[in-house]
Image 1 (cartoon, rainbow, N blue to C red):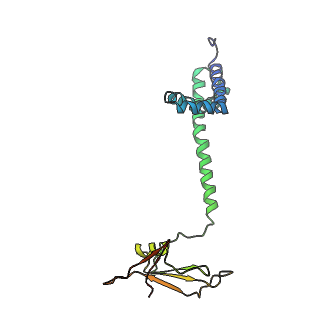
Image 2: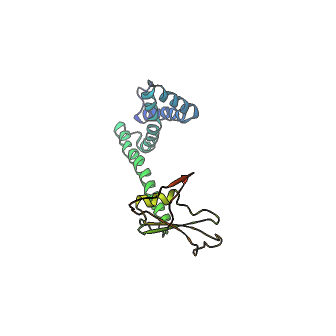
Image 3: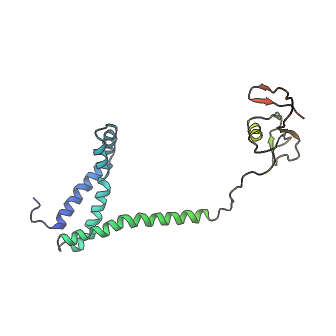
Length: 196
């Protein structure tokens, strides 16, 4: 059927066949077939081979476009069109990635928020809403036991709006070594430590 045909004609025929196969593969029906092949153990190699069809079809379309001006010069000229097609398949996405990275850098260049350094203070205060108990709950206990802070203050604010009540008084919690410790009473999610 292809005997006596030019090299470009054969390339164009292969391109059309693979392009149609790629369109079928990328359709919803092709996606369902692909998933079914992946689920069945035997169909995994077939599914992987089918996944190669769209990029190969794109490569052949590009090669056909680059081979169009030299289509009457034989196989060598047609095969030489594969080089710019391969370069285009690499350089276009690489260029788009570079542009996307530059745009992302431009978008974040105005961000002035410095990276927060680890907390180095000895005391930490937690301001709770009015009428909340000043208990040493989960955050307080973890901060004290881990040694992140030496003193943890829980203060109940009298007002929360528009500005927090920074004059609020609260209860300070800390850990200390003693010869004899009073028992800790546990109730619910809170722990009652002896107050000083």
